[in-house]
Length: 103
Image (cartoon, rainbow, N blue to C red; front, side):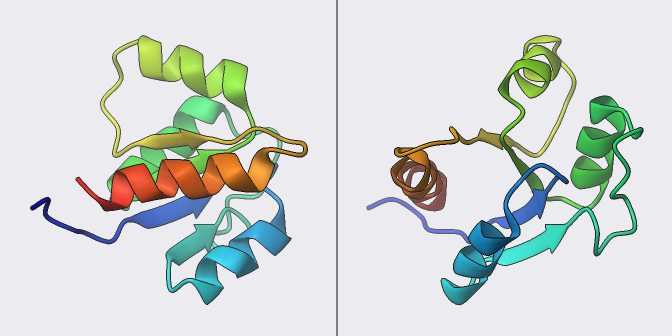
């Protein structure tokens, strides 16, 4: 049987707030960049990832290209969930969180 653990999330400014509310309804601890005082499009993605890592949170974002590059660069982090915008958005999100939830 796999061990379950709840993850804490950090949504950057491009992640839809209505999805943050849905995650909170599912009892996920989600901190938004706005709530953290970090909602500025001028903040480099590397700094977003560093902040989330310092807070022991997994970044949740729609910014696939930049965060995939950061992950592939070998920078240590607490995790990155890259969601797809569009009709499969919610399904993708749920599947990724389910996968992280049961580790």
